[in-house]
Structures are given as structure tokens and as C-alpha cells.
Image 1: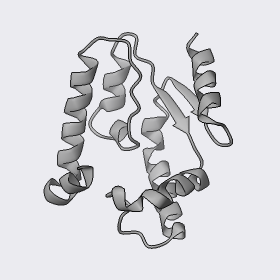
Image 2: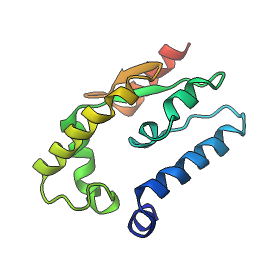
Image 3: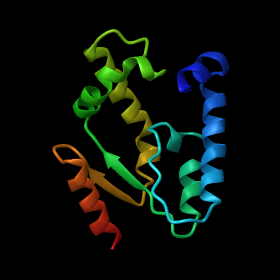
Image 4: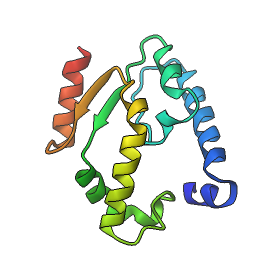
Length: 132
């Protein structure tokens, strides 16, 4: 499990394996949609790497701290980076700090879609319009 990898080998090992998997998946050269975790774009040169691949579109699904907090509060035990946090306020603070730190990477995406207040279907529809 991701949690086990973080515990036994550390985050950097996980991020290296994550990048290797991403490269392997993209080498398939098949039409696909890949949803990356929030940390993936922030390690190594992943955003630059993605921008160099023909026909790859990167989309930042921009979500507020409050919405991300609501999504993650019930998943705390499955999320190694936040499993040590004790309250919703601590989770929100952690998310806010990480969004700020990760923004330079996220802002390299070719497209951006705000997700707050939108259903998954509405977000998908907005993405579809941007890509056509």
C-alpha cells in the first residue's frame, strides 16, 4: 500500500516509483486520461516532462482549501502525509501550505478548471469543451 511504502521506504522512494510508473503508462502511446495525485507534478521535472510529450494536455483541477479539507477529512488514515494530523483545522492548514508551495508546479498546467461547487459531470463537461 502507499501507506506502507511511505512508512518503510519513505516519500522520495514512493515519488521515484510514481514517476517510473507514469513514464511506463505514457510509453503505451494510447489515448487515455490519467489523474495524478497532488504531489506527482511537484517532484523531479514532471510538469516539464509532460509538456514535452506530443498530444498530452495537462489540466489543473483547482479546488479550494475548504473543499479539499472536506474531501480528505474522512480519508486521513489512508493518506500518509496527513495521517498525523488531529483536527480539521490542522488538515486545512496543511492543505493551504501545500497548495501555496505547489502552486508553481500546478500553474504550469496547460489548462485550469475550478471545481468548487461543480459536480464531477459538470467538471468533465467543462474539460471536454476546453479540449475540443
